Amino acid sequence: MQATLRLLALFGGLIAIFVVIGWVLGTLFFGDWILGSLIFLILAGVINFVSYFFSHKIVLWSYRAKIATKQEQPRLYNIVNKVCIKANMPMPQIAMVPVQTPNAFATGRNEKTAVVAATEGLMSLLTDDELEGVLAHEMAHIKDKDMLVMTVAATVAGAISFAARMALWSSIGGRRGGGNGNAILLLVVAITAPIAALLLRLAISRSREYKADKEGALMIQRPLALARALEKLEEGNRRRPMTTGNPTTSSLFIVNPFRGGGFVTIFMTHPPIASRVRRLEDLADKTGFIA
Image (cartoon, rainbow, N blue to C red; front, top):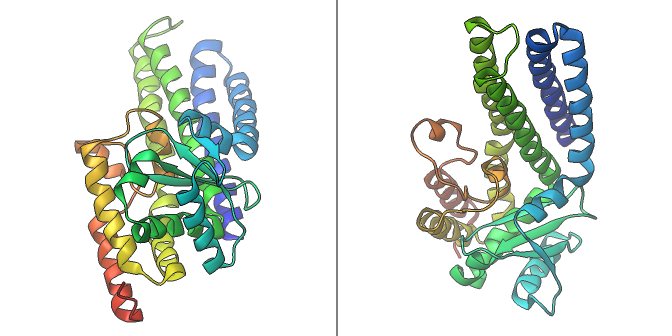
């Protein structure tokens, strides 16, 4: 139920932001705010439809993730299967992402379409225990139905950023009946719309990472294995950040694969690794799971 409400809130946020952008563009360029709002309302509806049914395929395509069989990726398959048995969950599809940045994500509309993807860098960096912790974290997202909301959020955020760029391009040149007031208004939309999209995404992703850490650690009864993995992943992604894909999808990954500084850090999609590790260490103390 919570996942459904979060998804509806996300779709509602997309519609509201797109209608505002349409209202601004329609007023300034068509002299008709109703037409502009209607066009962007229809566009938002199309994006919502595509996001719900195809966003996971778009994400896999954008990272060149290849669905793999047990024979092709026996280590990844066996560890995911081991986690599924412990969690009493159906086996998802597995996929390999051909990049050396160590990371992982889960995507899919439901358990039947779920895919757990790992990068080549992840497989070479972590031990089996640490890899099990990471994959248990991703299975926890699937169990809590987070992956649909997070995948749709990534697609929606990208769509809003694109719409805002349209407004920015319009403000730079080719405006009719222009004037500084129109340009300033368009610039405001271009700046605030991506921030609004990112805030919608942040409301979904950060708290879910803490929960997935905890549930994944309890699945395998080894909180410290996941803690060690997170520390390695933070260093590995700092040394070799992702150069492909779109930063709007960063919330899908177990740690942020992209790097940014300054103002960007205010909008981090993941809690600080040190905080996540500390919570896992506290969990190990409380439960007695010290492995």
